[in-house]
Length: 176
Length: 176
DNA sequence: TCTTGACCTTCCCATCGTGGGAACCTTTAG
DNA sequence: CTAAAGGTTCCCACGATGGGAAGGTCAAGA
Image 1 (tube, helix red, strand yellow):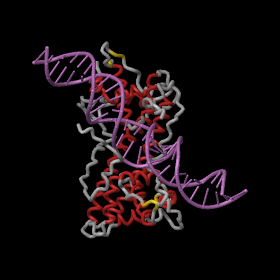
Image 2 (image 1 turned 90 degrees about the vertical axis):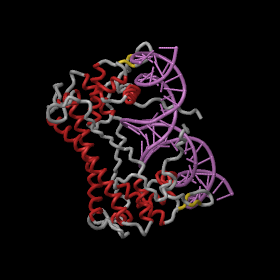
Image 3 (image 1 turned 30 degrees about the vertical axis):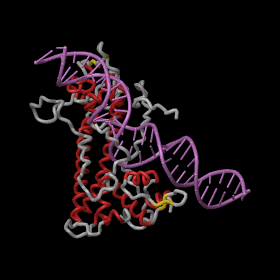
């Protein structure tokens, strides 16, 4: 079947299928004489696996590891569990961060009259947030929340014969 | 003071200060004779406002609206509250999505022995997730979680004299 | 005075996963 | 035979941020 049909059957868009192929997450599809990609039901199965993993929030690099284990019938479930646990920890961390934001914001919203008057605790807080907690905190600029946190953990030193580096295409140095 | 000092004093990196200026979130800084950007304590105040709003998860477009209200001393607090409420709704939605992921994943993790055997409910679920809920669901490919959801809500039709479009540099629409 | 190092400037690139769209080729239905 | 639908590659954009190169500026110490 062609890419459009595979997309419909798997829930992964044609664009993303090409992208996954390009980055090496999935093997290169075979081609028809005219150059169209051709997919088997087995390929669709794999795409659905990927789709589901994305729905659970796994990053593509993590999915790459999961796919390796999926294909390896002599895998140890401990390895799978380890990845899943690392991922859920990340999810919970993000949840915590968002909840901290939401909690603070809710307090401010509750304190805002929301009428025609200009006075607003929301703006007041943005303008001059109180020191985070307890007394004696005199370094207001240091308490970073690290909201968009720690995304640099790419190099997972995995090594199941990592596909083709899993890095998006070229980077043609302009030879300026 | 120069950009490095302003960065230190506000908690916003020099890179981001230049970016905010470029996108029109903040007005263009005055320059010294030699071309260095020059900041007043008032500018730093504004940068701290931005920093705090980012810490609460507000997107730059939302901060743009908040800044407009902040500067407008005859604002209505209702307008501020509206923005904050819209934002908290978004936060809670993201939290819900993440919690759904984490919940599902936790169940799978709990069911995984995590030993040397290959059998693993995590992989099994990725491979063939059960129908979302109740019986009779025969359209397994349709239940999108919409994880990276609805990000297209840019056009907020705000109109407090939006700075310089707030879009990062060029966009040269090919005049189609 | 000269040097050095720290800082500034602009400009480009990368991230991550996804979509939009142009330009062009192939398949299929009418 | 033609037109539409859908395939192909290639480039661009998003959002917010960081890295870094090439070159100018400033301040402190020899």
